[in-house]
Amino acid sequence: MDIYRMSPSKIENFRLYIDEEYGGSITLENTIKYIQGKTEWKTTMNYGSAIHAILEHGHLKYMKKGGICVIKEDDFPEAITMTLDELAPVIEYRQKHQDLISEIKLTYELTLPDKTVQIPMRIDGIEGLVVHEHKNPEGSWHLDNYERSVQWKIYLVATNALCVQYNLFVWNKKKDGPVQIELKSFRLYRYPGIMDDISESVNMLINFCNQHGLTQYITPKKFYD
Image (cartoon, rainbow, N blue to C red):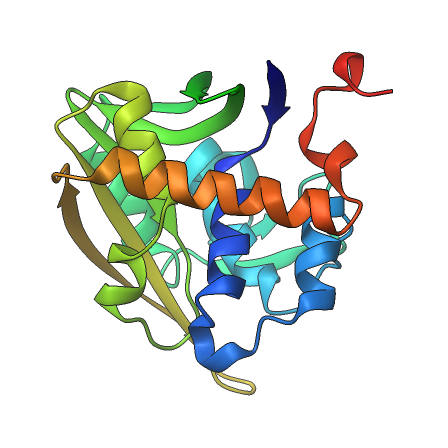
């Protein structure tokens, strides 16, 4: 029996490519780089990463004098400075969800004909029977883009939760202006055929990697020659 190992984000990124989401802007080259773990940092990631750091660690870790936060983690190419007013929706969310258990690591094992697929993941948070998934889109967002995602479906079956709640911290930054953040939340639920959809996405990624000489990137090292 073949054994594979892949993250939900890798599965989802491939689905975005295959389904030609975002107007087909996700190229074959970028998809291969993502599978290889060679995605380059983009400046548009800065504020999204800063917001996620506040969600994970709280704003007090980054507080400086004058009511500002200087947000910097080891994997950040540069520090991001934001005021408490700018971060208010993020701070308020953390205060409302103090029982949220954050950054949960687990591995889900998906059994398919002739293969086993290990799916390691780190879930943003669980609160009771609700999985919380944080996203930080810039500018605009569309509900159907998230509904089609395979990522939340994997989280749902892996945890056997009631639903997945997306928390979108939508941010905008105009030149020389403040960062504006608005929270949009919605929930997605299990549906008939969810396992078939997950299995199809996983199988398509495996076939793609086998065809393009990328199998080593979705195989546990000890099982790969």
